[in-house]
Image (cartoon, one colour):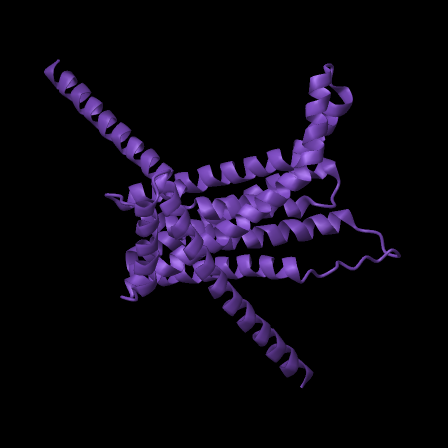
Length: 315
């Protein structure tokens, strides 16, 4: 009988330990999720464009296909690579983060450049659109873009984890991957179907107020999507710039980082209303401007590289 009681005590102790570890995993996953917020906003803002111009009935299936590809990217490819890097080459994490930050700056700068230098999309009236082929192209392109953003998310997550064991580290990364994918593509699904819901409310609503809300949704969704896209671009520049600034500090290049901190502190000391928020906003603004400068440089280098490659091909 005493042996059975001892066994039950051991089981209870193990259960408490497992519960504590699960609580720690959940808490750290939530903390890491907050640190990747900028990339998440951009991921959510970018994805709806991949269903634009395709039949409404295919919107949710396309989002589901992209979500499955995103999970494959994170869990099957990126998670094992991240774990191996952390064990055998942790010194690579900061340079990889900086490369990812430069890519985010490039993407943000490219969007701003195209805003002022738009390229019209050619339309061939003689060849109707093959929606099935277009869908495959869109899904493949979305999954490739997701791979870059997911790599950045997983690297940021890995650099933010304070786990006591390799198992806990892997579990936190897996929870982050699942939670972020569900959040991003669940939000995308809501966004792409919001106008359909608004149209149905406007046409079939029983009450006048319901129809009015439906009409407001239909009218407001284009502007709302533009706003989301703008926030996503700003988030890319802010996050990318901040990643590079913090990465430079790892190489003892602290001038820019100290300038950002000093400006943030000065703003907080000079205001009496919401000093914390305004200090953060100052830091984000300077990081975003620095990110824009980095992005424009990368964009220019990419343009030079493209022209050189085209010249070599002609030769």
